[in-house]
Length: 391
Image (cartoon, rainbow, N blue to C red; front, side, top):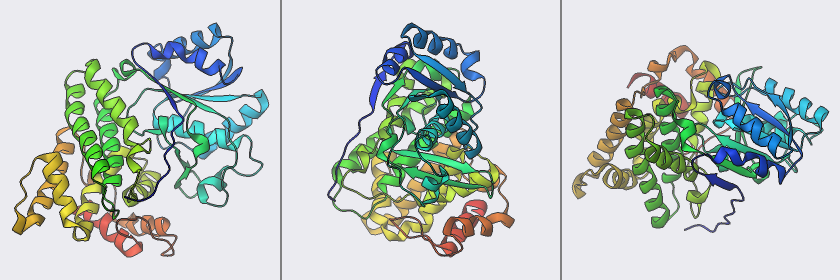
């Protein structure tokens, strides 16, 4: 097990009606907040009115900025930064899923910074301060409600990049499983794939031994595999939603990173796909991960066989562990297909004529490699994209 330091300061307020506590949680941090959200769903559902009522009851002033899109855009982030500065906002409150939370985090980073907030996403600068962030989660998926990460797309050039900093751990996050009851099937499936991808990225590691966190990751994967079909079958199954929502948070709050170095190449590969094609992040991950797994299988066949056995219950024959490993990948594809996801890029409208463009952007024209379990350069990226398109 590798040396590690673990700290997660995010306060989780979990359960039915937890959103009613947002006023008191916000008041402990600031007297004025930016209420940041996506489209009109929080207004149609009545959540917006509940949040506003709670803020007013606590004596917290607010200004609003809606319009966050999936794969959140830099332009709206800059609009939010200007608004926060003008209104002297002390907390950015995200109400929504991962895209809204990521956008809120970017705004929080940009308000005290004198330069271009994109500097943090392009690697030109490291954050040194940020406004506090609070969240009310409506979509279990990205895990941004308790993570150090934020991913933003720059419209010019269609670059999608991540920034990681402990400064953007949310100060508090409110998780009420009932807020997910109205999600459509595609968002549920995409969210499940996103959670599972966070777990798989951590599972495939060269760190040894990591038996304890292996077992935690395997258990969380099994929880998602159990819960996702249940909520698809019965949209108001509170207990299943509670399991799925908490699994999504644990999958990406860095607990499961401890003592190991994850891979993350598939996330980088997917960022290029969603930047160019605008596909949902979870959908892109489902279409790429099986091909990445087949491409990297030889790096550690035993690890692929282990997850096939422990998560999917497949028998390992010692003289032919590669067969178990490949059956495990097929089982993952079968599960994702059963909840309505495509496991091929062609199913998302991706075309072969843009593969080289995506590989060039990913690797900065061959100057950069991604991934830790196996290093992926431009040629390897082209092969994985092509496999994911055709296989």
